[in-house]
Amino acid sequence: MKLIRPLFPVPTLEAIIDDYETVNNKLITEIDVIFNSDSKKRVLSHKWTIPTFTDEKDSLGYTNFDPTAPTSLTTDPNFKFFFDHLAPLISEFFSQLDYYGPWQYVNGWASVYPKGAWVPLHNHSPLHWSAAYYVKTHNDCGDILFTDPKEYALANEPKNTKWRGDVGHAVTPTDGMLLIFPSYLKHETLPNEVDKDRIIISFNILTE
Image 1 (cartoon, helix red, strand yellow):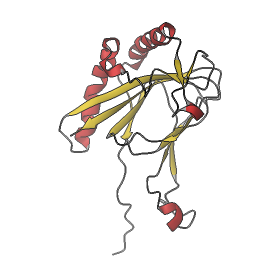
Image 2 (spheres, one colour; image 1 turned 180 degrees about the horizontal axis):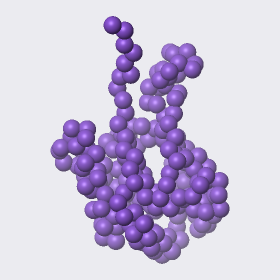
Image 3 (cartoon, rainbow, N blue to C red; image 1 turned 90 degrees about the vertical axis):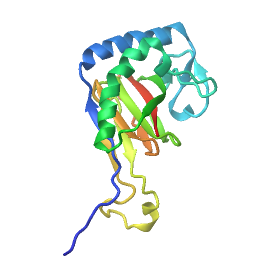
Image 4 (cartoon, rainbow, N blue to C red; image 1 turned 120 degrees about the vertical axis):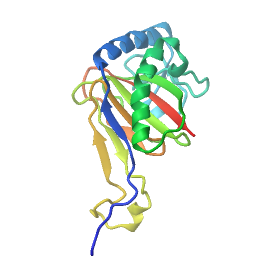
């Protein structure tokens, strides 16, 4: 018998949540409150690792995530409805992986990406699971790209080999889409090419 077996898959979840129109309308209201009440927005994209703030809404993207003074939507009572709404779906995803133990949200933040905004390649290690939820999207607003974690293969396998380590996976976001993936999985976002904002909520999860 001869068999080519692709070993060690990376489990991810891609789902459209129930009643996302109602959820997203409430989220947009709460996100507007965050950014209209505080003029400081952290610049993302090429300055994503530097806690630089801007008052400009047409920058390369802004968020309420600040690594120097962490705040989290997961503990904000105005966003409790959202995280409670996702909890059953997340538990179902873990059960499909044969994990039935406890899990908890670690942190969460909202981000707005106007035209031209992009996110460089990064991961969320050493956390366990990470997620992106799409509150507002448009055609050509920027796909998210996941990179095969088998980085050693870039040097050790010939180009164009099937399952080679530089093979990526692109996801075109739509309203109400939830993506969950291992925190070690590197990802980036292509530039938003339209004159409308892409709005997302990101969060991390710990399991035991």
